Amino acid sequence: MEARMIAWKFLAPGAMGPFSRITWPTPSPDCPGAWVEAIVHPCTSGIHACEAIDLPYWLHAELWEIELDGTVARAGHKIVAPRGRLTKRVDAWDRDAMRAFCADCEKRVREYALLSAAASEYLEDLADDVIGCHAGTASGDASRAAAAAGGSAMQAAERAAQSRFLVTRLGL
Image (cartoon, rainbow, N blue to C red; front, side):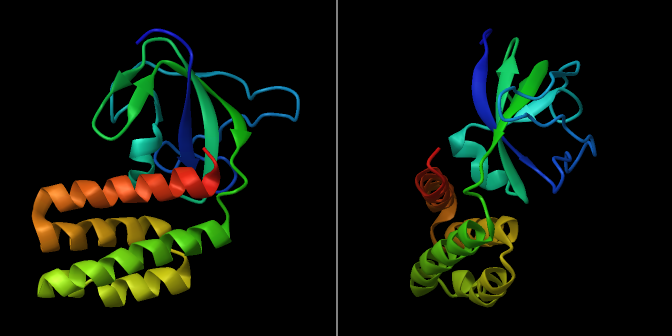
């Protein structure tokens, strides 16, 4: 797809790419951040971002709205483009939202535990995730518990529930 597109990007504190270690130019109140460009090689280089359905796979400290430009390609649970710039930080992604996300995951894992002893093994991990606000870990734990309880279809439904929670809670 060739055109500008709005997507989402999780970054480490200070607008730093958690994998690339690049510090992204941040927007001012009246102007988007500067464009960042890269040759597209999914998982290696390019401007990686996500659509709403991909959010649970990339949880990190900061969430930003990003404008992508050029040919946008899907690569697994992400999209990749040759150019991107941050347009605004999603301030609703804060410690309270992270804790609520973890608690929402834990609630579903309790339901999975009723279906499968293997799923119940994730309950203790989820309790730690809620206390520590480890949203990325909670997302993975809940996904694995869903798979243990009902296979890949339940795992996909779990990731979809996580996406719906994030979109609703964060007003995306």
